[in-house]
Image (cartoon, rainbow, N blue to C red; front, side, top):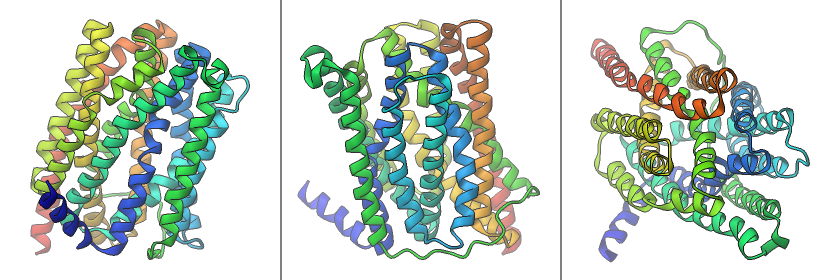
Length: 418
């Protein structure tokens, strides 16, 4: 084990300095991500007990994100990319604290909090993807995302357990005066402090801010339209993934402590699997990893819909814990590879394609959230919880042939160029 760790450290040290700094900062911020992804929805559900209220947060988040992407492109002409990225990290911590300071959680207040978080999310992801794009090459991206997702997944094991135990302890043991919302405020404050630490590391890094030219286009090649179709499919499930697991667990299983345990079980194994995938696979294996993640997600969704009880929730959560990072590990390098190819072919700024991709995600997110809202309004919250996700998961399986077509299109273009 000692020799293994030493050899892995040597590999890390041989990476460019900017890549090392980015990895370390993102690993620290990875501790914050489970709090935002899991316990935000749990907080709203605890205080409203209403599915419609919970869905308002991801809708606001997904409205704010593309607005922030556009604003980010303008600001990058005057502000360094590392300052924009670190600002997005800190703003996300502030937005989380803002949500948990709202006295009355009305749908409009939750929507506003979601938009603020979406703006922070946009600054974070726009500059994160831009920095990865400019500090790595295609042959190193499997390794980069493998290492990053390994630590993020480890955090998703430890953090939910600790946070869930701490919050549920207010009820069981009388911590924080027996008021769970006080525990949520402590958690949000710690998340903000970690965001500040990660931001500090990014600011100390030496990152070059590329010149940003025109970044809004409506006409693209067939290859990029296939990438946008993949983005639509990916966006379909994101609203559900952000909000619904917490709703399902708290309705069928228990409180935040149970939610934390469920999120943690299986996560360590997933972390090891992801690290090995990132370490041992090449760009040629991305399609296989992508298809495996989509299939596992569909299986979990169908299982939950068929059973719709405690066993179904547990089965879905375990499938989600493994499938989501697998999909990210494959999808992000696919996106960046396509951005590299298309920007070079068309002579456009790479940020233009990152911006376009975000609107592709937005379109899918709105369809997915709209489906859940429609089912909840026309039928019931239970119907939305039971049938929205399997429909979305089955549609997402179409991503497999779309990716194959995208890969062939890039390959054909590269052969013609050579």
